[in-house]
Image 1 (cartoon, helix red, strand yellow):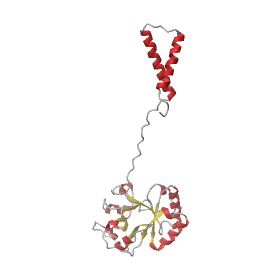
Image 2 (cartoon, rainbow, N blue to C red; image 1 turned 45 degrees about the vertical axis):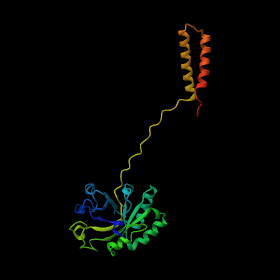
Image 3 (cartoon, one colour; image 1 turned 90 degrees about the vertical axis):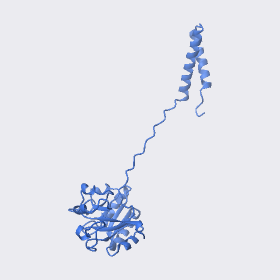
Image 4 (cartoon, rainbow, N blue to C red; image 1 turned 60 degrees about the vertical axis):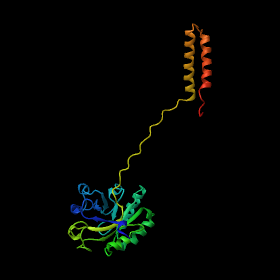
Length: 253
C-alpha cells in the first residue's frame, strides 16, 4: 500500500489538544470526565474533529453526529452498549464506527452481525504491535482505521510535524483511509422552481373571447348608426359565442 492511500490521524485528551497542529487530522472525545474536548478546542482544527463517545452506556448524544466513534474498552463502553447505539443509529440511517482492540474485534463483529448491523458498522482497531506500514496494509473491508502507536507502546515516537513525543503530548497515532472522517461539506438546500402561471380553462378562455367579440361588434354597429333592440343584442351575443368557440383551440391542441 502506498502513502497516497492512507493518512495519519492524531487523538488526545482535550487538555492536550492545543499541542496538535491546526491542519492535522484529529479525533477528540465528546464525553469522559477530564478528557472531553470543548467546542473552542475543536474549533482550532480546519478539517474538523472525528468525535469519540467514551461514556459507558448509551448517552443522549448518540444521534447528534453523522459520524460517531464508540469507544469500546475497559472503563468505557462494552460490546452490548455498542450494539444498542449502533442499532438506534441505523434506525435513523446513520452508520457507526467502533473503536476496539484487535483481540476483541471478532467478538464485536459477531455481535453486530447477529443483530443485523454488519452493514451499518465499521471499525477503528487498536493494534500497537504493528508498524505504520503494516497498519496501512491492513486497511480493508470494514476496517477504516487502525491505531498503531500510543504513549505506552511508542513513547519516544515524535508527533508528526512536532518536536513532542507521543508520551509528552499523550497522543495516539492511527492510519485511516484517505478522506475518512473529513468534515462534511454543507449541502445547499435545493432551489425551488417557480410554478408557471396556471393556464385558464378552455371554457373560461372561450367565454372571455366571446365577450370581447360581442363588445367589438356592438361598438362597430353603434358607430354605423345601428341601434340594436334587446332581442337583437342577445342574438349578436349568441353569434359571438359561436364564432369564439371555433377560434379558441381545444384543450390539448
